[in-house]
Structure formats: C-alpha cells, structure tokens
Amino acid sequence: MKDGKRFPIFPILLITGGVLILIGVAVSIIILRLPDNRAPLVDSGADIPNPEMTRVSLMEAKDAYETGAAVFVDVREKSIYDRGHIPGAKSIPLGEIEQRKGELDPNGWILLYCT
Image (cartoon, rainbow, N blue to C red; front, side):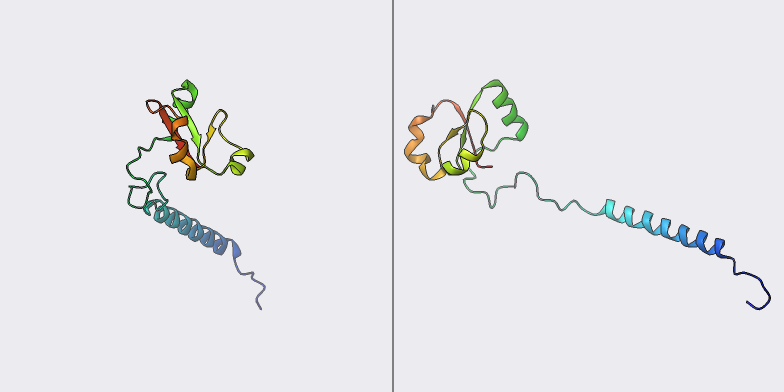
C-alpha cells in the first residue's frame, strides 16, 4: 500500500462472520428436517425371535418390579447373572427355560430379560 492507506479489515470480518452464521443456521435447519433414523427400542417384529411373546415397555416393567406384580427371570448365563442382575431376579439361562419352567408359576406374570 503505497499511499499509506490500510485495507479495511473490519467489513471483511463482519461479512465473513455473517456468512458463517447463515451457513450454521442453514445446516441446523437441514439437520432438524432429516428423518430420525435411530433404531426403535422395540422392532415391529420381523426379526424378533419368539414374536408370539408379549413385549412390555420399560415403564411397564418398572411398575411391575416396584409393585411386585411380576417375577423377573434373567435368561443370561449364570456367570453373567452373577456379575450383576435385577435385585430379586431368578436366574434361568435361556437354554434351561424348557426344563426349568416348573419353577415358575404358570398363572403369574413372568418377565424374561437378558440385558
């Protein structure tokens, strides 16, 4: 700059900042309009084993636990059950359910879980 004048940087910074804000708003709008592709907590049933079994929501299970309305059966292997389980849950590994079903009240509410 031969004549001693400085190039005005403030207007360039102001314009650049404005453009960045507009880009951020546009990206946010686009993201908010995208469909929610997260997997549902309970699938529609096509790939679920034993689709004839009734599934319950987490809230239903919590209520059943708190009121004692159901017996919880952990169907994981005993070694995994021993590492941690729902307090009061009975351990019957999935491979033993058929042989040990006599341990459960057939008229009671039985909630099987594995996680």
